Length: 270
Image (cartoon, rainbow, N blue to C red; front, side, top):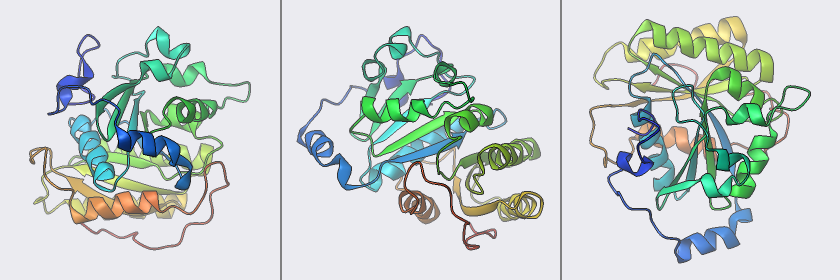
């Protein structure tokens, strides 16, 4: 799995296509016309109580790939490989291609290197945009506290990860609370790594949605289930596709103040 590897292992071990994919004409066109559509910066909250976070990221990037987007995974979680020294000098050189639609950057500790005197690390996002012009989506996987620094001055919809047990949902709620209070990010999405047949999942989503709305004023926009035991090459499900499209269709340009979110897609929906 993408995020459950030792620092000595190569990232290509976690994808079926084991060899790096060379740059092709499509990559050149993406670079040439990259400004034609907005690049999305998405905070993905790391959750130590979810055993299959790597699978979640693989399926999420596959869904963005199915939507025609190239994703850069910036892995800055507490259990991720440490950022290479090279990354602090030449960020682009530290990015590893994993396939035609996915690139990877080991980035544990990197957000702190970009913190300014106001406590913001938002400059990291500008550096990533420059380093990976081929990326339509920059998925930053990190703790809620690191994401609060990186997205302090950005408009975004965080994605929290949960599972079919209480501790993971408590952690997800705490992340939603921190990002709402420190960054005024008042909408979020939820990915549940669980058996899709579990009857508890709609209740879990509804409970998290209700607590976030009632206590924080934060709204759950979309939620989807990712089956850790499912086939790796399975097509993205309808709810995951909706979540991805909603992220891609966010109206707020990067750097703008988040608007008040409409109250829709809040309730439990598989």
